[in-house]
Length: 244
Image 1 (cartoon, rainbow, N blue to C red):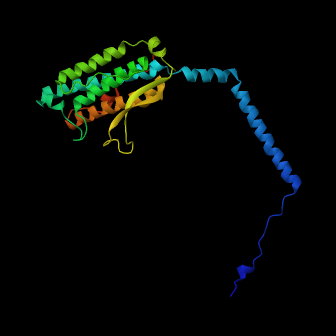
Image 2: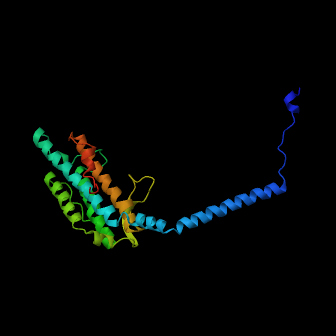
Image 3: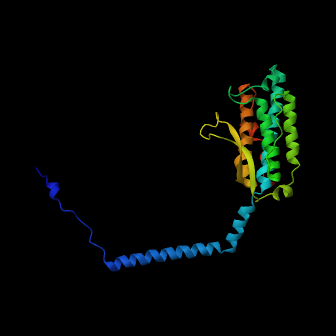
């Protein structure tokens, strides 16, 4: 049986006249032209040019690399010193830390310290020479030697001058680095050298710095599992505040 609503007539809006459609199209076109002219006016404005230039040069290659590495490298040195002090005060085994791991299939503490110094020093050298060639890993060593290694990295980083580092900016950097054969299973895959098309900026920001921070935070976490009294403030390091 048919219901009443089946017979309800559809109410349609009256069709727009051809003239009103054309008028609407002219209005839309006028808005597009106005928007485009406004954008061109802004782009041609000297103030815009100045702001854009300032944004481009606000952070130099030196600023994004050397002081950034130094902030965390000094922080690492600081929490290694706290580890030495804590073990001396509590009688905990300082040398046991050297081979400690965060998880059985992860590299030990001494590897984390070596790796972070390599990505800092030899990451900068790679930007300079186009070759990432850190020295062979030393392996397990006395805890004091790990602290000395971090100290040497700090001295090496401090030796880079802004003019020297900034002169490397913007060039093409075709650099060979190890990457997994199977990117979907990198923890079990073999790793092989691959040449990647980078720039000094993208090499540091997308490769050296992420690896550097990974090893620094892993070393920090290993120390926390050993009961070393550390917090985020110790990892953060000295902030680069502006002079007042």
